[in-house]
Length: 274
Image 1 (cartoon, rainbow, N blue to C red):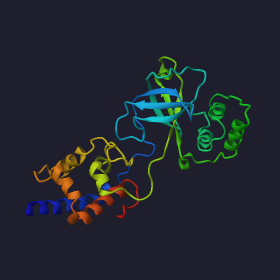
Image 2 (cartoon, rainbow, N blue to C red):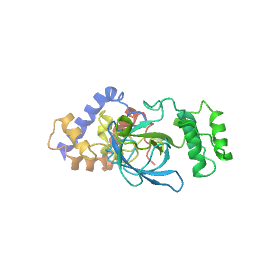
Image 3 (cartoon, rainbow, N blue to C red):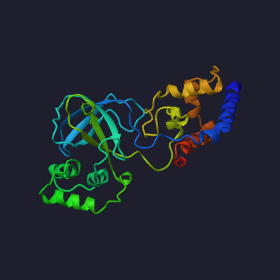
Image 4 (tube, one colour):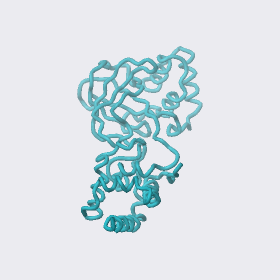
């Protein structure tokens, strides 16, 4: 027990000595998207033009291996339903492709929908391919979007993320699409239990604060790896020991302090115990 108490003090002092430097580490800007292709499978939607399921997404990003509401960007190409194909993902905030498209207007529409699915899709096509809809709801959405040229997409409930198939880079022709990405959780900082699983974020490695304690590269093992790397791999500093200490009320104050160093580094407000 004495050895463990000494170990706790050593680790706390080491963390304190590095706090100023580590506090400058920032989580990746939202949305944090993979830099390599992922797989997209589309089927017809019920409340959106497509239901788009991503797969092959590594952990640690703002997109996940799950289904999203999706929309067509280019109606002049075919979307094979239920068949996966490779895509690159780009934020609609200053994307490196399709940069001439008015993505501010499209994001406004996604966050201020009117009418039926086809009305929303027609309004999107108005900005992507110059389509001229005749339906009143589609025209109303276009007029509203044009009336808000200063709209900040980052304040919306969803953000358009472009799904650009590799055919654009010379492969088979498949439709460009977009998905609706919800924003990350906001508010108070994350708990000691979260950072136990996400220490790599604080150290500037892969991953970010996504709200899911298992959404970082390395998951639980990252904490043990961090300890071994920074403390020297001493036998007392095992993952099991760390888990015990995070849950030990005797050291609750210290772990909360450490967690809030992590929160500061990620640009989050302090975590407050209920």
